Image (cartoon, rainbow, N blue to C red; front, side):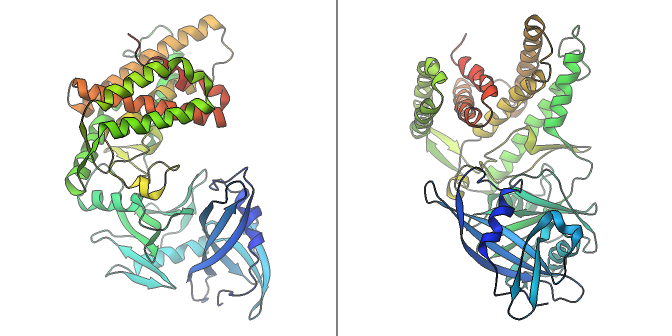
Length: 461
């Protein structure tokens, strides 16, 4: 079957997008302002035709636009096994009625991507307007069956057997995606600290997705941390270092892993410096914006300004490619050690901002804040306790956080931090906590006390 070129009603995409987990514009009014074809996969010989579309949205509140990748699998008859992924139907002038489904929910459709990667073993391969690339020395099983991961957020991922994972970017920004470019550098360096990149697919100069190593037996770092806190809270007689769920060893190994990743990126990508005064100015500007949203920050403003002033006095600080959005949920624990994943950077930033060199201490700060959130997340599941018991739980949780932050920092820095390093990590941690107060105020108001407590500790003895 040839892909339809007529009859697609842009209005069908709105209802579908708003019910997906990966759509980032929920709650905002928008119109579908354009639908563009990027490529077509499949020759109709026993497989569905897949139309890889780029859907442009224009938001009513500010006139901004976003691009979403929506690959459609076409069938001439309804496929009720795909009812949950139904997008719409329309009549094509050449082939009649077409039933369109999100292709990533269709195993028969997803294998077309895997086969296209297989054809790129000896060099870039064109497939229906898309270009597929493979890295040398990376073998893949092109006959494996695909299974869509559940619970994905900003992207969609398909596991092919026990061999590989295809991640297709849903929200697309023209240009190279740092998740691919960073993974490529780390894979070519044979880094043991990431899932190796096998290849990627692009249209023109825009990255659409990546195929990488499937870490089948890996455990999510956030889940491991939560388990550790639960084990600690289950036995009120034990200190964190004595509890069966002590996480400090893992925290130290995670610090080692992050340091090694930063070393490779420092050696193989751009190294530069950035003015500490400029960085402090950005942090002050973000604080200005946050104060308008979170008035509860006002009592802490003097201490934050003083901290950013100390940062401004450090002169030039080293900058390089970093992760940009690091937390425990971006880590996996395998039998061979920790792996760091998802190098796309902070989703709220533009692509141009995400690929800029930054201080490695931003990644360190993100992990420190994640330890704090882990303890508080478990604490919130104990709302049946009275205030005395909750206070005891908070004290023990704070001990857990301090212990794991200390082990992580010592491992990352290779010992005690210098005064300048401590200023850097404290400033970046405060900046992250300020961002969190805005996020929580807008999305989970009952959680805003978590980052506010962290901000309150700035400048405390």
